Image 1 (cartoon, one colour):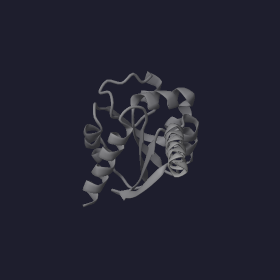
Image 2 (cartoon, rainbow, N blue to C red):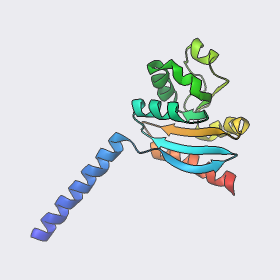
Image 3 (tube, rainbow, N blue to C red):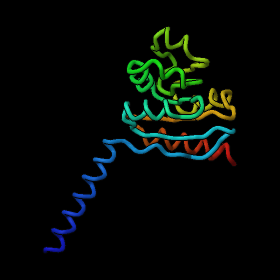
Image 4 (cartoon, rainbow, N blue to C red):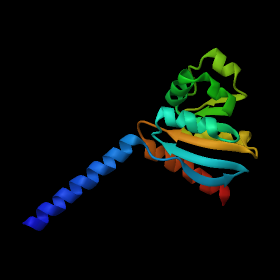
Length: 156
C-alpha cells in the first residue's frame, strides 16, 4: 500500500512539473543551418525574454510566428523592427499590423497555415540570416512538428 501511494505522489509531482514547464514555455532550441540561415524554434516564449533574445541575434531575422505574437512584441518595442528582415505569419492571411510597422519591414506575408508559410520562407532564404519559428497558444506541438518536418525534408 505504501508503495502504491508513493507512486501516485511521484506521478502527481511529475505531472505538476511538466505542467509548470509548459506554462513557462520551452527554451530557445537551435536546429542547425538551413540554406545558410541559423534555425531556431521557441514554443510559448515569454514576450520580454523573446524580445531581448531577438534583439541580441547577430543577424537579421526571418520570423515565422502567429500574428498575436508579432503584435504583442511590436507593441512592446517597435525598435525590434531593426532586427527583423521579414515576418511570415501562419495563422492569418490578412493581418492587422500598423502601417508604421509595415513601413519598417522589408518583407511581410500572411498565410493560414504553417505549411503555406514555407512557400514564402523559401523565397527569403539567404546566408547570414536567422530563421526563427515561434508558436504559442493552441496546437503548439502540431505547429512545431510541421516546422521541424519541413526543415528535415529540405535537408534531405
